[in-house]
Length: 77
Image (cartoon, rainbow, N blue to C red; front, side, top):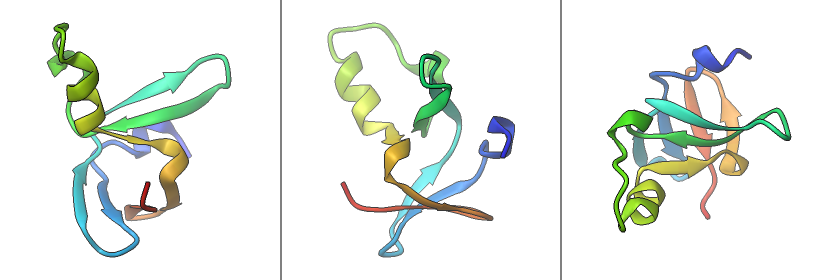
């Protein structure tokens, strides 16, 4: 699957709770893999003392992804 195919997909939990839509992604270039899916554009994340909290609130670690089709299904933490 191409990275561009993830953009705009709805993310829901395996329990059916809607989390949001993929707006951007964080890549792990050393592993050559997606690290996290962002619920907001990366450019909207501002540098501040709260950046880590904002990032945690607006991202889903890719390791939680269970299935990708029309929607992205993620497991709980």
